Each structure stands twice: as structure tokens, then as C-alpha cells.
Image 1 (cartoon, rainbow over the protein chains, first blue to last red):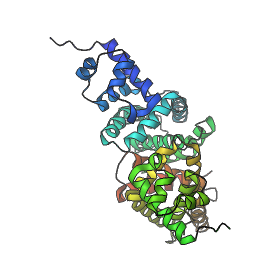
Image 2 (image 1 turned 180 degrees about the horizontal axis):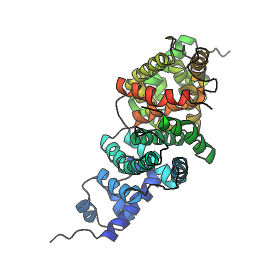
Image 3 (image 1 turned 30 degrees about the vertical axis):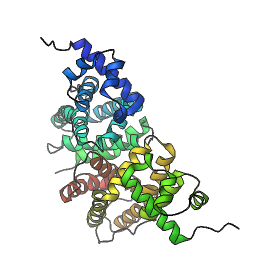
Length: 189
Length: 189
């Protein structure tokens, strides 16, 4: 009888996926290499994940998945600064390089693109909804303020700057919040 | 005595560069393959361009370089719509795919990144300066409206959507102009 791969074993295998993504990138990472790195049998790997996008999806969900808590500093500006500062820390680190690598692979792989978009973007929508709902309640922005638009903007500004290799620092964060995000959110519909 | 490669010959060689970028991508394109495709001798290629980034730089400059005319429709909104619609046409076409490919290669190649940034971004700054100067003169935006910020925003929104493989259509253009660009430009400093 087949037994399901245990959670802690799956976690270790996903850890191996992240190591290999950092070392060789998505295109050159094979399922067999993951098995070897995680000291798992190929049978275990192929029983649990049908293909590479599925395996990478689980590894990504484990690392970045779930919906993080929305910051709650008492003001929209404070929340935005806190959110973007946290995002910078991730983007500037090893994980940021791995995500950039995955994104470039995704431009030639529609399935990977859908996976990435789900884990990195759609699963975070709730954070923006919570932040904007609180700001509307406090009367800081009109009820027409659009959390999806905010999410798209933040995502685009961070990703593009990261892609060009520029530093994501405090000065950049403050400029994006004060000159772009707040004016966009405060507009009347 | 060495003779310089003639302009029409350089143009043909740059055309071959673009063909190969579309077919095999930056990483797998060799100077020798360019020579073969353009029916040029390797000596000609290496005499004119020291290395691959230089050759790609010239090909890019030929295709996208120079400063395009700023649109002049009589209103800032009209200018923005016209500019973004033209950018969509390029982004949705073959050249858009080539640029996305180059950008992904640039994330692992600092020299290529600098080249791309110069040709695709810095050389276009004047367009945004002209557009904003006219809008300030017409009293549509305050004199503090920042052309660089506008440029960064447009660039980020178009690039990110293209990277995720979403369509750049009229609806998207109108939303970006009306909900993001105009509110950002109309803010008081």
C-alpha cells in the first residue's frame, strides 16, 4: 500500500528545491537533482508531485505562501511604510534573487507564470483589502480607494526596481509611499 | 590599412543580432553565430564590436534608440493615452518578447542591464520632460509635477504586466492613465 509522504519529509524536499533554485535556477533544476539533494528516492518525489511546476508551487507556498498579517500601525501611511520596508528586506535577500530568477523562467513557461502569480500576488490580496478597509474606516481615504490597484502598484514598483538591480532602500520606500501610493488612494473616484 | 565597417553593413549585422535574439535568446547567442547569420567574417565583427554587450547595445540603439517625438495632442490626458497606446503596440509584438528576454538575461549580467537601462529608459527621459513642461504651461498640473516619477511609473506598470503575460489593451491603458498617472501628476508637492 502506498503511503503519503510525511509533512516533515515534504518540507525537507521543498528546502532542497529552494537550494537548487538558488544554485542552478529553474530551467536547469531537475526532479532527479531534487531527489538527490534531499536524499529521497525518485519514487517518493514522483509519487508526491507530478511535475516540476507542482513541486516548485509547493516549495513557494511553503516559503512565501499563506496570507501574511496586514500591518496595523494606526495610520495608512504607517501601514504602507511598514509593508514596503518588509518587502524590501525580502527583495534584497537571497529569496529576492530566487524570485527574480523564477520570474524570468516564467516568461517562457505559462504554467510556472500562473503558479508564481497565485503564490506571490493573488494570495496576498487580503492584506491590501484589510489595510484599505481600516483606512476607509478612519476616514483617511474615500470608500472608492481600490486595494487591487494599490497591490498592482506596489508589486510593479518593487519588482521593476529589483529587476534593474537598483537598491530597495528607505528613500525609495518613502518616495513611493508619499509621491505615488497616497495620492492615488486619496483621489476621488 | 583597416577600413571601418560601412553603415549599411553595420545595419545588416544588427538585423542579424535581432533575429538571433528572437530565436535563441541573449545567453545562447554567440558573436560567431551573428557573423554566420549576417554572412560577415568574424574579423569584421570583432573589429567593430569588442564583445556581445557592445554589439547588442548598437542593435538595440538602432531599433529602439534615439529620443522619439513627444506626443502633442493638446491635453496631458490625450498625450498619455497616445504614448501608452504606442508602447502597448511595441510590447505586444515580437520586439516586446525580445526585450523581455533581454531583461531576464540582464538580471544575471550587470553590463547588459546598464546597456538596456540606457537605451530603454534614460534615452527616453526627454519625452516625459517635454510632455510635462507642456502640461505645466497649460496649467493642467502644478510645476512640481515630476517627469522622472511619471517615467518610472509607466515603465513599471507596462513592464510588470508584460512579464506576467497579461494583455496590454485599451482598458488597461485607460485605467493606468486615469486612476494612477493623472492623480500622481496633479498632486501638490
